[in-house]
Length: 551
Image 1 (spheres, helix red, strand yellow):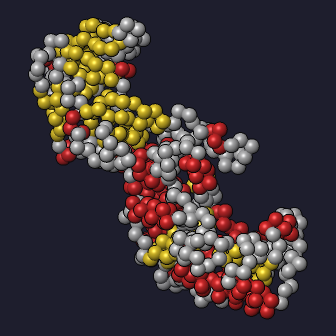
Image 2 (cartoon, one colour):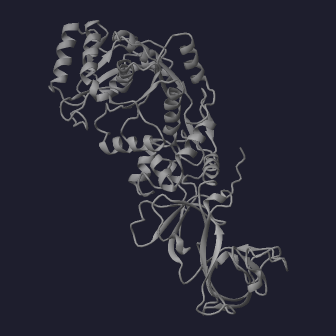
Image 3 (tube, one colour):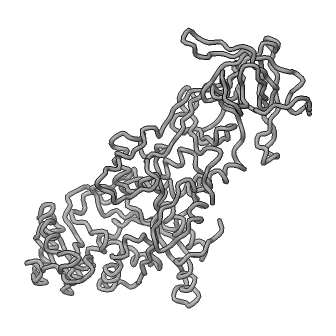
């Protein structure tokens, strides 16, 4: 589908195939269905599906649904939609919950081997007994229960005889290990909660660190690719696969997660923004979620190109969010039709243009792609221009409209400002101008030159529209996710959304949700899918035309 840039994971896979270690590559994308996917997940999707595609392998989409309290079918459906929208098809669709019986049996096997025990300590006590990075843990008083006692208690846990938190099953590994993850981690907990997939069949659920390696092994995953924060979990991952006697032995590889400037990626924080009303849902165009980026107008091609460009490394860095904007511009510049929209309208009456007359002017749909053809724009004696394109007392080097000055109307004629009409408060509400019929665009007029060209929309046929302009949702050039002293909510930008009401050309009457356009001088805009059914059009600004970012 796209170019494949080299990275350490790709090199490992290439070598594994060349040496015959694996003849078939299987990767997986394993989201927990407890929220919406964001741009960080896109990097993982592009990596997992990309390397499998390149080497003729398979990728499973697997929902890691081991925590019924946080999961929902709404998230399952949104994740499927996002993966497909990004341009990928999974080979198999799995749920971790499909393997609950097998996971239970593997836990019983650990008990029979003397490698797991039922513990009655509370969560707080377990944390206390675990020790610290500098001090070893101490064994639980229940660590030496007999195999028979553990089997009996674990069966009774499954049968629902105990309440939430009364007992857990722990792996028996090493309470003095320098890696805290190996200090008898909890592998099952009791949770009397209805599960979106298994209903009320289970009241005990495996912990992620136990379930994940088993899922990979059951599915025959060869390369289990995850982010760097799971590096410390790798010894536990390997311990589970080995001691549960799994036939297939997957290997875990970690890469640096994606961090973007002016953005938060934590699901918990994104959820807070949604629940506390800072944004209009998970798909708010200011959100870094895939659904938010889609609604704003980002294209899957741009997101994939961005993910490939930032590459995969063993360290986590911060990427300038303007780099993503750069890829959207590059993608849309050859796809988006050009048009004119006036966001802050000021009426102009062209006094010497014949009353009641309308003429149609030709304009290229996209000058960079001539085969897209020509669109027609009506022109008459009443038009709207941008308020910013007129100044009564301009500074020097201001080349747009001011009293006595002449400008070119894009695709049309030269007009000259003759008179300024104001309301009782002194606000400019209308301009009276004259036009020069000799200066029609495209006629090869070579008389006098003007320095300014401004855009406009014919007033009588113009279609009312709402324009939504976005700034970064989070202030601060560089986000420090660990800066807990200051709530990230204090950095929410109060000016991240500006709503303007203006006009677009009449040929925009039949646009559809997700249609994208380049508005002359304003940037790229997307027809908002949530508001197309209402009585007016809503355009979301995707990106401005130019950026200060340099690749």
